[in-house]
Amino acid sequence: MFLYYKAPQILSSLHFQFYKATSTPFKFIHPHIYLHLHSLSKHKMSLTLRSSTSFLNSKDHNTLKTLDDLSSTLCFALIKPTRRLRVKNSTQDAQLTRDQNIISPFGDHEQKEKFHALSSGHQTTNDSRVPVYVMLPLDTVTLGGHLNKPKAMNVSLMALKSAGVEGVMVDVWWGLVEKDGPLKYNWEGYVELVNMVQKHGLKLQAVMSFHQCGGNVGDSCSIPLPPWVLEEISRNPDLVYTDRSGRRNPEYISLGCDTLPVLRGRTPIQVYSDYMRSFQQRFKNYLGNVIVEIQVGMGPCGELRYPSYPESNGTWRFPGIGEFQCYDKYMKASLQAAADANGKKDWGRSGPHDSGQYNQFPEDTGFFRRDGTWDTDYGRFFMEWYSGKLQQHGERILKSADGIFQGTRVKLSVKVAGIHWHYKTRSHAPELTAGYYNTRHSDGYLPIARMLAKYNAVLNFTCMEMRDSEQPQHADCSPEGLVRQVKMAVKTAGIELAGENALERYDGGAYRQVQETSRSGSGNGLCAFTFLRLNKRLFEAENWRELVNFVRSMSEGGGARLPESDSSRTDLYVRFVDHKRKSLKDDHKEVVLV
Image 1 (cartoon, helix red, strand yellow):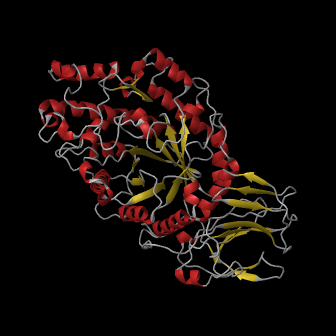
Image 2 (spheres, helix red, strand yellow):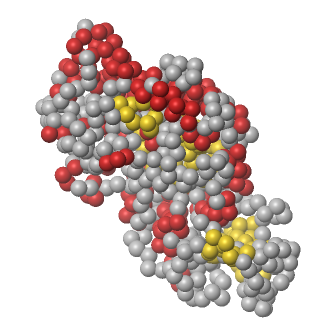
Image 3 (spheres, rainbow, N blue to C red):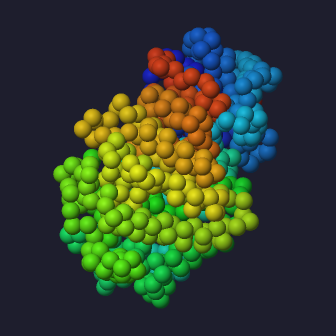
């Protein structure tokens, strides 16, 4: 079997075509992705992928005039009859060779073609190479515990591999796996996914997602916490984060009860640990080879933070400052104990009374204004307690994960939110309410980085695609300044930095910003980048072309300049082709792919 790229420029939409030797022909159709599986005799076949961008240079593009012009292609060779792709990826090898002759599947005559051979594996001598992963859909596994749309997933993974992507990231939802009761785990949907990822020669980043899906930016489905956990919350609402108005947030269990046996005799930390231990036992044969990273969830959206800016029900809107989440009875008891220990009993009665509401600006409040309460002895006490509790929570879970996955050769990572609005102000109010004690006088990210360094964990940071110039002036944003600060923090702590885009972006400008950020100028460069996210839009012609160019550039260490624009069309074909028969049957059936 051979996989090769080619660029037909007479079509305008993205297509996948498969020709497969089966007794029952069929065809998948999607507005942007088309797959044709035609009947063939059971002979040797080749898998053909075509695209006008991918890894072809501009000179190659100019020679491609029609579908019958079969120059400039990329080859994936398969020797064994199992159809498992053994992919050689040209993004890791700048030197292309043309040393293989394949009989053309097109036309009634025999025609020989030459192909660009792809370099093997993902290893490279380029130390500045940044592997690119793609985040899978939130509903990759269904509520019933099965892999969602496996045929579409199979084709998508094949396409990503052809583009030079290193692997994929998936949320391993607590609310799906342990929904049937305490210690009753169903991993089977994820087993199917891991096997499919392995089949295509990709790697997997697995996120231990102990939070609810739904109610935040980009959440396209609803996956609540396990039903038995929700029952406990209904009996004791203080198990979840609470704001000053008494509003409860069911996204994540409050860190205030981390060490209390509030979940049917187990503490939340024990529940998370048991979950990760079960995962380790079920997937032990994949750890370190297919599953290469475990991102340990520590809060809403899987991030180490408080749910200070919830979008559900319109509670918060950008660029509001958010609110402190320290009003459940467990957090209040902890605050009082800390105040008593400092000889300031009155400071423990409640959180700040002048910190405003979700959608206010810093200068609208007594706490966050330029010379506000945040810069007083009380403000410093409160923020040290509030941020310290968050770091303590993160270390408890990370220490447990480190013990569970020790010796498996997987990396551990922790995700930190990119809260870039009001970054130019003195108080950095939205960062403070989220638990990052980052002000004009205090570095909120260095303590987190140093905590991660104890366990050699990677700090995964968002908003890598954002430019200051793109942000509204009234919000005092500086995503670029924030990223520079975090890069310096990880450099000082001696750990690795990985990145994600905060919002779905498919334009060249966003990719160029990530490429710029990935360089190691003022701190650490990136050890990996995860693109948000796999969906229909990614496979649109222009978006796919941008992704392939980006992956190629990152594989070259960000040294290759991404094009400002590309007026050519991208059409992606994938075909299984009979080598001995030169004609393709026209009969087929149609089923919806996605």
